[in-house]
Length: 287
Image (tube, rainbow, N blue to C red):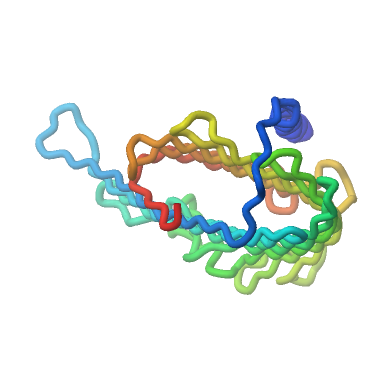
C-alpha cells in the first residue's frame, strides 16, 4: 500500500509541476460574481437476444449523473460550492436488479484572498449514498449500508495555493466524523473494544488537490485527490482519488471514463478500486 500511495503522490506532483512550469497565458481582467455550472446526464445500455445461436444474456443498465459548481468570486473572497450525485441500476438475465453506482458528495470552501497565491480557507465536506447496499457474495444477500449510514463529514481550515486556473491545492487541520446507525462495522466500530461504536471522530491534517484541465477542444480531465492523516502512522493515511475523463462526441453526447481509488485501513487493508466507462447524453444548464 505504501508503494501505491507513493505512485499516486508522484503522479500528482508531476501533473502539478507541468502545469506550474507551463507558459503563463496573457492575464485577463477578473470577472467577479457568481459562476454557475450544472450538468445532468443519463447513460443507458441494453442488449437482447432471441434465437441467437452464439449465445448471450439479456441485460439492461442505466445511470443518472448530476453535478454542479456554484462559485461566488469577489475581489477579496471566493466561495466555491460543488457536488456530485450519481445513481444507477443493472439487471442481467433473470437475475434481480442490482445497484451499480451510488454516490452523494457535497463540498463547500470559503477562501479569503491575501493577494499572494497562498490564501486561508475553511471547508466542509459531506459524503453518503442514496439507497441500501448489499453484499451479493452472501446467500441470501446481506445488507451492509444504507442512506446516511455511513455518513462521512469533514471540516478543515488552513491555506490554499492556486498557481494556475486549472489547478488548486489546499492543506490544513481537519476533523473527520464517521456516523452510522444500523451498520457500524466496519465503518465506525473499533473491533479492538467490546463496545459497538456507531460514531468515530478523528483529528489530523487534510490535503486536497483539484485538477480541471481541457486536454483538447472536446476533452476534459477532472481529478480530485483527497488525503487525510490522523498523524498516527504512514499506512493510516486515508486516500480518496476520483478522476473523470470526458470526451465530447457531439453537442449532447459524451464518452466518460471514471476511476476512483479509495484506501482506509480501518475499513479494508487493501485499496478499493472502482472503474466505469459509459456513453450517454448530458446537458449543461448554464454554459
